Length: 172
Image (cartoon, rainbow, N blue to C red; front, side, top):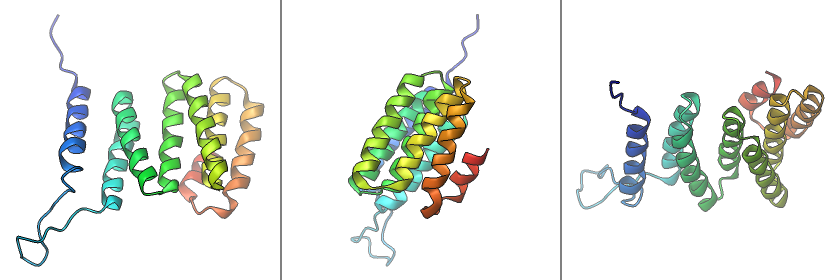
């Protein structure tokens, strides 16, 4: 039998190098003014976008282990800077991933955690996200009645939230 390298491990290694080397060094890119003594650092928001890009890549390419690692890193960064919208977006994606790989219990636990945290913060998108993950679990179990009921609740909670892409996802 011929050995086939696992490219997922390479991607995880690259992501870990990014996290371990780039983030602690404040992501220095050099000075804008030409003065080598001044460093322009990558903002936490830029880092958040980069981590989100990795998370989306892993999500869209069924790279579960890498998705878990990057989601954790992104959620920690969001928590540190109190960016709850991206925090709940990532938690939502993580909950969906658990359902797609057959770990409904983990998805339900993620949804419960998201619900409890969003309730304590009064965050409508987080509450909608928790219901959405629960709806995806119901759908996977073939319980379309409960799934439909929850999706209606999600749409009600999204009325004051400007997330059209997520709203489109609810309709599909």
